[in-house]
Amino acid sequence: MLVQQQLITGSSTEATAKQRAVLNFDGIEKELYRSIMASKNLGHPVFAYTVVYVKDVAKSVEFYAKAFGYTVRRLDGSNRWGELESGQTTIAFTPRHQHETDGRTGEVQIPQNGNERNPVEMCFAYSDVDEAFKRAVDNGAVPVSPPEEKEWGQKVGYVRDIDGMVVRLGSYVKSPS
Image 1 (cartoon, helix red, strand yellow):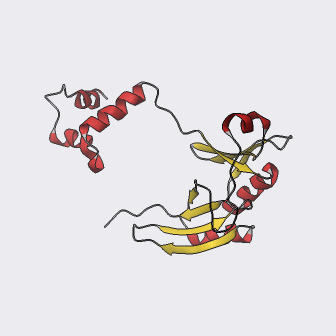
Image 2: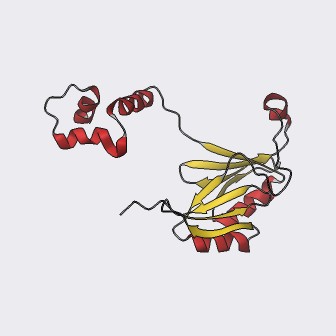
Image 3: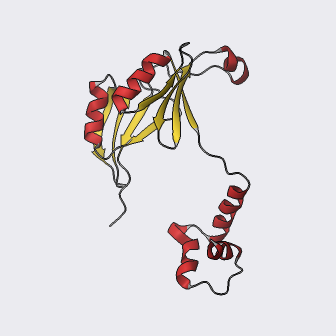
């Protein structure tokens, strides 16, 4: 850690070329790395939740659990909040209209037809995208585009959830050979 800190501040004369190379990984320059580390020391934010506004919280939580393989963390009895386990972040569901937010942040805008979509897209990564796509469709997702290999090294397919939101099912991007 001391060597890393010295590399960041530039105070080490003992750092090897290999250690200095750590500061230029994948094109990230030294100044950007310093900036990232500085913001981390100030309390870098953690991406905690994605909140999805839905017609029916209980139905959406059940759908996402079955169609995409998530585990239900929480579903309150009032049908106003549900959560799924998804690794480091939480996928949360809440009704489209609620008095707590409609007056403060405005009403949720819903696409009016099949040619429109939300400005945000959920993307779930799987090792077997074809099987994930099949499971989603078998459990009520509407197929939009079957999985296909993309030029950037990812296999991607698209479905719509029970509220019409587009969900991308993709592999992790393969590193160039």
